[in-house]
Length: 317
Image (cartoon, rainbow, N blue to C red; front, side):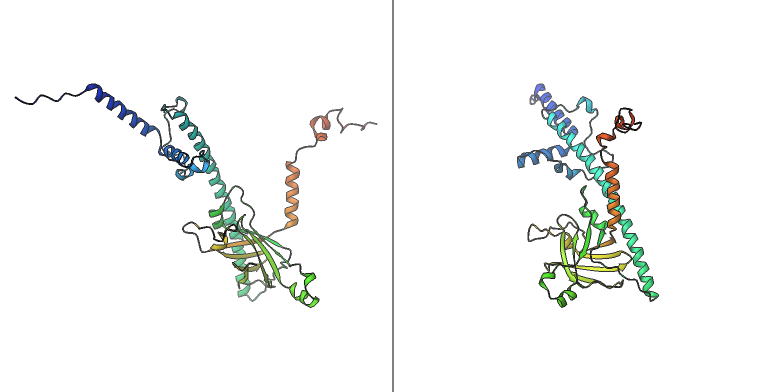
């Protein structure tokens, strides 16, 4: 006699199929970012922050990113953690839009800085032409002057929505009370300066003797603490070039060690400088404030147009 046929439990097989189906449904519905972000929250015992979503938001184009529902209004996923999932999904979508707007603003800033680099590059070509023709371009007095700095490469690594104006300012060091008249006369020929790249990267430098003529020759100046070297080229007509090392750009004033730069960062950053017309900046700022200030109570429609308003008061007496 042959062996009896092996009997199967139809209920057990059906239960297994249901569990497998539910697991497959969840795998299809819940994207990997949800488990990753939730694991961070549990492991570090904290709420999820916007930065936690950034790891898989590198692709911001309008294409599928594994986070689509057939119909969001129906909340197609109905697992026990559905509320948490849809809450985080909303936060992730906000972060995605925020990063997209940041990328657009960053591209705009990079294009603007590239245009300024082209402007200074044209001035540098004019200097080369003048030198070939044995002509001299004078450098305006630098004391009390400032230059806005531009570098598209710097934008690439340090852009933020609070991106401040990069600048360098030149000045005499006030040592009148400490030097003899002869020493002071010599000292006033020496300049000092401040350079500001961002909230962390800034320093004072000097002293150095400013050139009177534009030249391709580099003027090398040490920072006041002796840690960094700055290399200037004063090319005249309100333009300059500045080269600083990677270590200065990534300095960390709060520790003794510089910040670790990301891969493929150049060893030297080259900035271009354009003279700051402070009077023009002041006028433009006042115009902006005037255009954006709130109207005074005495400038409301009623006060300016109604016969009982102050504007008409006493005009006929």
